[in-house]
Image (cartoon, rainbow, N blue to C red):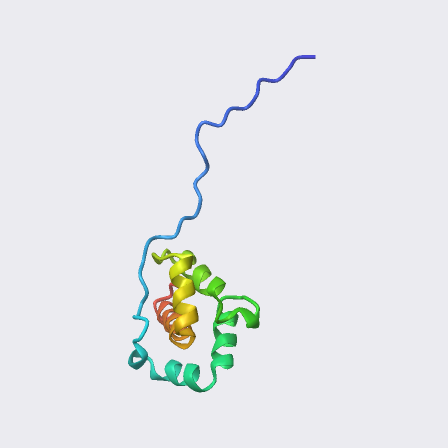
Length: 112
């Protein structure tokens, strides 16, 4: 029997790293989409479920730090988990509305 030579990997396979981008709207840009803002203000759980459904996640995760971090990392938006935590805990409605506005705009650009 002849022993086979070990396989040596000299380059790593490329991974799908999202291109860097930014949020489509600011955290407090409620007037850029009043419908989202009204939904977030008066029916927060409904907006949570809409965002979670858009992201193919569990409805209970819509307003979580994990959802904001997932969205950021999926679209290459700069930030940190610490920053996400502060935003979600200080202003959950603004955070969720920003995510939904971003989803809507990316969908309109066929980038979602």
